[in-house]
Figure: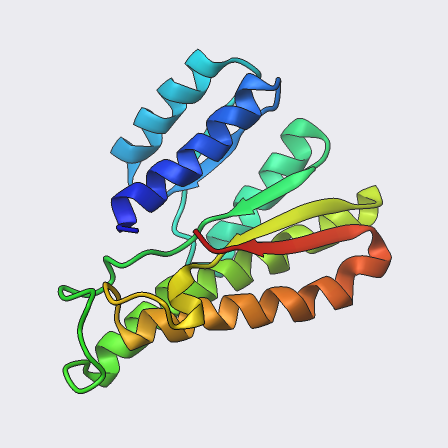
Length: 183
């Protein structure tokens, strides 16, 4: 699955949520993509939806967005955590031999750290409200089953799967359900 179809998959999940009457708080560092998504969510129903331009790799920005969403809407029921993708480096299918350490780190940071930061920020809010749901987007690459992605991407997505399993055990007693999906 390409990053473009992965993004469309995430959009479809959010669109279905809006169509069922849900309110979407969308976060992206690309204002154009964020505006396009917000137009689609508005047409799907639910709402009021809100756009938050922010960098998912900046802890202060993530914390501020999550705090504002919790304040504005009174609670956060679901975190659909789709941080990441294949565009952190110029050759998304680079072999291990072709990857530099800097490229490896960019891919891992882009995919794993943003996922952690959003989970880290939302858990206190969900704990205080008595529960919630976190859905982390992994990938079939995280199970070593993608020829179209690098080993760095596979490693990062595999880490998301392991992180999700561990996190579910940590926060389950607080009523927070955590799962990963691997489109």
